[in-house]
Image (tube, rainbow, N blue to C red; front, side, top):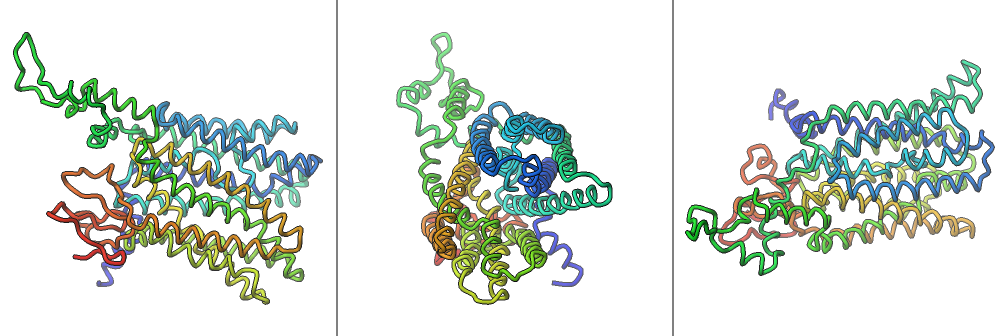
Amino acid sequence: MGIRALPAHLYRESGLQSVYSTGRDAWLIILNRSCRMFAYGACALILALFFVELEVSDSRIGLFMSLTLLGDVVLSLLLTLIADRVGRRLTLFAGSVMMIASGTIFALCENFWLLLFASVVGVISATGGDFGPFRAIEESTVSELTSPATRADVLGWYVTLASIGSSVGTEASGRVVEFLVSRRGWTLLDAYHACFWLYAIMGGLNLINVLCMSSNCELKKKTATATAPAAAVEQDEATTTSQSAPPVTDGVVDETAPLLLGDNPDTPQQKKGSSWRQGANISRDTLSVMILLWALLMLDSFADGMVYMSLTTYFLSTKFPSLPKSTLGDMLSTAWFLCSVSTVFAGPLARHIGLVNTMVFTHIPSSAAVLFFPFPKTIGWTYALLLLRLGLNNMDQAPRAAMIAAVVRPEERTAVMGITGMLRTLAGSVGPSVTGVLAGDGRFWIAFVVAGSARLAYDVGLWALFVNVRLHRHELPEEEETPVQAGVLGDEEGVIEGEGGSVDGTTTPRITSRPKQTNGGQAVV
């Protein structure tokens, strides 16, 4: 490859080509998430300090955090289940309005119960994480806008820029508070109030972005008919028999009409089936796959909850009491920056080795780092494990979203992703309680051993159960292409030339007399 071809190669391999080709709607969704994570990062830094300045008791602060998380989970589930019916853009628009209202209330009011209501309705993030309904809706929309070949790349940049937005928001709120207090002579409480205007402003930017989105963001009605073979199997025999009879007009058989009414997507029978399927939300076929995946993801989230970064920093402070807080802050900032940068490579890696392989083989070193984290005696080796943990920890996010989009029907994605987020949040909320009990008994280090072991169990289970799962069977026409496997190595040129189509790191073979075999995850030509 010549020097002149290098920029084009990097442009393609970085996933920027996929992002650009997807179009304006995807750009707006990525911008929306980045702005929202900026707001979450800004609020997470000052939220507890804000209540301290209001002289709210520790018990009430804990109650606020718990009820906010619970409210976010319930609201997320409700909105994601109805988003495809009422409209994704309308749901995101309503969420933006709620962000503006909540930011305004926090900037102007000090009543605890009013702030709690605003936090739940406006999805104020107590931890800086994206626990609201918007992520599931956005990921489902991105999956709708992308092709299987570009989805992992676009979702990779969706995750990367969101992480950068969160870190910038945290830094910005800290700088704003410092400037207002030291330069302007404001009180801390007034400075915290001012920071919540950033949340309202980000909500306003989100609202403008939603208004600029096109109807392509909505669930396409034709996707319900794309699964016609599966729908035909589920129809009862009486309906099938009635549809098989040729149409009769005035006693004469109309031989020009289609024999099966179901072949015509505009017939009332097909519309009725589509309506029924949308009302059911999640099919048994999807549940058979997702129940196993949900169980594994809950195990992973429980493990992550045991070693949340706030708990990790507390462990470092107790293990190395002479470590300056400024040094600890610099260490964490560097680690989070590495975490943000590494997610850029998730999409290209998934394109080459497959979605499940990317999820597993980037997560295993991170899990091992958690397992061995409490054992080093020096800060140097401990920090090296922290860098390894955070540097690879988020590389599975984009492939995970792409995989979920690939194994469920398009009309089920929003609901499935919403339920996935809810279950992960609930599982993660249990972890800190377990760690608290262990830390109280002087066995803090056991939390890292248990969490690392659970994460490794998740990795092994994911690879064993899903490496050969068929992907995109609800998207690719059966007469053209056969479904692909999640762990099969792909052919890069297939993406570019479209010969057989390398789909998210997997080679999609044309139908032949017998299917292509695999050997250890690699396609055999």
